[in-house]
Amino acid sequence: MNKAFVKETDDDDDDAGELAAAIPAGSKNYMTPAGHRRIRDELLHLIDVARPEVVQIVSWAASNGDRSENGDYIYGKRRLREIDRRIRFLTKRLDLAEVVDPSVHYGLDQVFFGATVTYENQAGEEITVTIVGVDELDPLHGKISWISPVARALTKAREGESVILRTPAGIDELEILAVSYPAPEDAC
Image 1 (cartoon, rainbow, N blue to C red):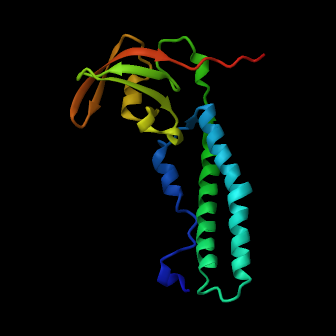
Image 2 (image 1 turned 180 degrees about the horizontal axis):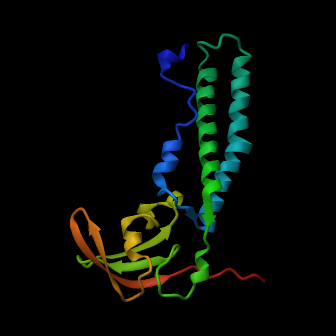
Image 3 (image 1 turned 120 degrees about the vertical axis):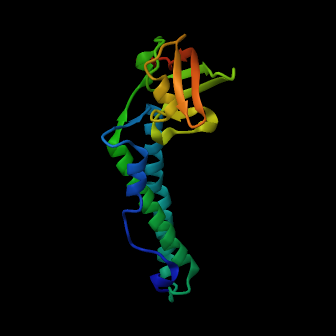
């Protein structure tokens, strides 16, 4: 099947825009040790397990003869391109990564990367967030990126202080109720 009919290209730079858009220019890709471990584990799984399985399926499908109407071959090749694209993306992310251990701030009441912060907004809602790397973002579980407006407003403030958050809906004042960091792991 001709690529003109399936609208696919061999362009390897599809993930370059995604990489550049998420991290501010000139910034490092800050990550917690857990986030770095998760991305490294995903990369190793793709390289050691997922890609070899798909290569085996594509090889088997190619040996069956006519490849133009062979669904296993066509979809296997497509899946292989997706895996290779993800491998390139994760490799670039890990190359730019700077692992920051938030436990070095254990016991402090000032907000830095890796802090878990409980704050109250003007509406009286108590919200708890953890400031993490761009690749660890999970707003449904209270993990916000260090480049988010809320994280930027909270950074360097101390427990008991109020900060101003500018939103499209207007200005919101956030009162920091608690700041905590994970305890350092014992080196024993």
